[in-house]
Image 1: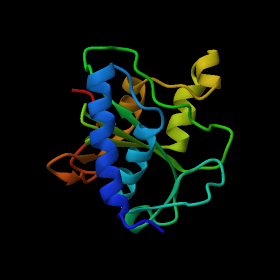
Image 2: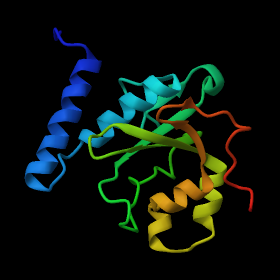
Image 3: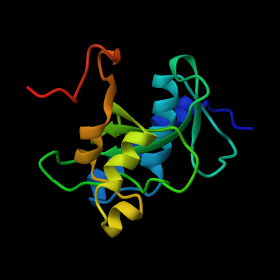
Length: 168
């Protein structure tokens, strides 16, 4: 057993990953996903699974009670760069929703989006491309179909406060 808390280790992982990226221009594999899972669990009241059954990373508590949630994370280093993608969605496995944690260049979360399975599957089913069959989706597409559920400085966002489905 380690003498460090998980929160302390995640904090150090953020710092090291950011320093590494600034020094080399490359990202450290796996860090973004681990940090995103920790942030989603802490900020959205999720229980991370030690043994992952394959389709989901966490079980929801409170308003997400019992929901099986896939967690994806992406550090955005250049917001003007288009076509950035989220990690492959496990479309052929069991889960209820996908949470996408967006992080800045210091690997700190600034927005979290959530999309329900039926909405994701409908959005992917409209295309017959190989990308959608493999569970690939752009960040822009995900944000378009998802709901903003957490914002830096504000915390969890209420359903009535944010609705990206209305035209205006």
